[in-house]
Amino acid sequence: MKPFSKIRFALFAALCILLPIHMGCASSTPVRTAETGKEPAVPKKIAVVPFETLTSDDGSRVARCPVGGTVYSTCALPKNVEGLVQDLFLQKLEKSGKPAVIPPYQSDPVYRKVKGDNPNAPVTQQLQMTGKALEVDAIVIGYVSCFRERVGYAYSAERPASVTFGIYMIQSSDGDLVWGRIYDKTQQSFSENVLQASTFFSRGLKWVTAAELAEDGVEEILKTFPGYR
Image 1 (spheres, rainbow, N blue to C red):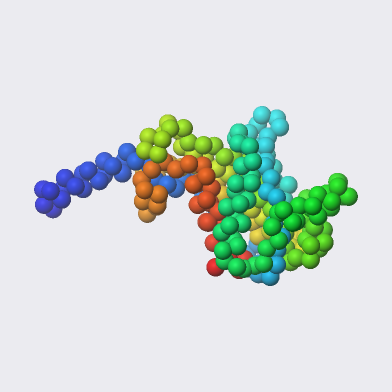
Image 2 (tube, rainbow, N blue to C red; image 1 turned 45 degrees about the horizontal axis):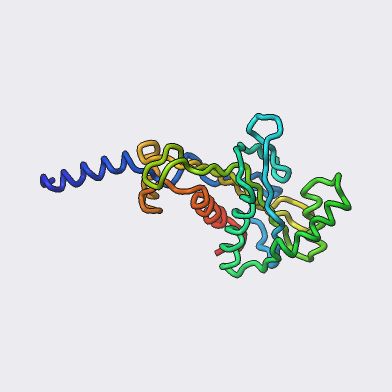
C-alpha cells in the first residue's frame, strides 16, 4: 500500500470509530401469530385504526401489548408521538397502492362505538368487530412504547435516539392475529457495532433523530407486510 493510501485508510478508520452508525443493537422482529411459519393471506382492503401508546403504570418501565401479548420496554413519550408513527406507516403503505386502505379518521368512529358497546371484550375481538362493520379483510393497529430523542447534535450526541413500536394486523373473519412486527432500536456508534457497517453511510455519518429512526423502522417493518412491494 502506498504511503498516501495508508494515510487515507488510517483517517477513514479513525472516522469510523468516532462517528455513529445508523443501526442499533436490535432490528425488527416478528411476533407469534395464529399461523406462524405460514405466509399470511394478502388482504384486498384493510382499515387502520388510530395507533396507541403503551406506558408503564407501576414504574417497572415495561408494558404488555394487548394484541400480541409481547412485553415492551417503555420510556417517556412526547405528546402525539403515536400519530407520528401512524402517519409514517400510512404514507409509505399508501404509496404502494396495495391494499386499499380506510384511514384512521374514517375507522375511528366505528372503533370507538364498538369499544363503547363492548367494553369488556378483548382488544382483538373489538378489532375483529370493527373490521366486520367496516367490511374490510383486516384491521391494522400500532403501539408505541418508547420514543426517546437524542441529546446533542447530528455530529456530537451525548445520548442516542431510541424508539420501540409494534404494528399488527388482525383478520376480520375470525379475529386471528395474522401478521405483526416489532421495531426496537437504539442507535449505536460504529465502534460499538462494527458488524453493521454497511449502514454506516445511510444518513450521512450522523446521529439521527428519533423521527428518522422511526421512519427507518417503518420501512423495515413494511418489507414483511402482506402484499407490500
